[in-house]
Image (cartoon, rainbow, N blue to C red; front, side):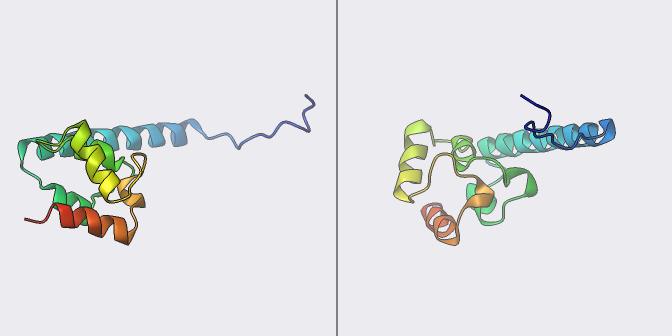
Length: 108
């Protein structure tokens, strides 16, 4: 390959990389805490889906559902199928229809 055919992405400074890594770590910590809160019942799944916090926007809906007590793999998959939501869909990527259908399932 000649240098002309290689595409180079702009290199990031060390500070930019460290800032991105720090931000990613913070999001992972907050997401883990949210999952613990869901499991303990301190946070309702309905609230997370209706008004998702920043740290959960890039999380997969399936992974968030798996943190809910009494929702295992089979029930989570069934709920997503019923709402026509892919297992790879993120919470932030839900359409209004998908979000509404999912919220209807968790209304109490």
